[in-house]
Amino acid sequence: MNAGSELERAEINQELKDLYSSLSEEDKEAFNIQLQKFLATEVGRIKSDYESVHGLNQPN
Picture (cartoon, rainbow, N blue to C red):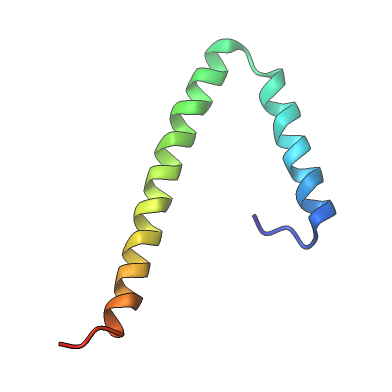
C-alpha cells in the first residue's frame, strides 16, 4: 500500500474490510477470484523483477 503512515494504512484496511463486508456472497466470490488473479500477476512481476536485479550480481 502507498499509505503515508500506519494510521492511514489502518484506515484504508478498515475501509476495505467494510466494503468487503457489504458485498453479497456472489460479489465476494467474484472479488476473491479477481483478487487472486491480481495477486498472482503481481507476484509474478515481482519475481521477474527480483530475478532480473539478482541476476546482475551473479558471475557469468
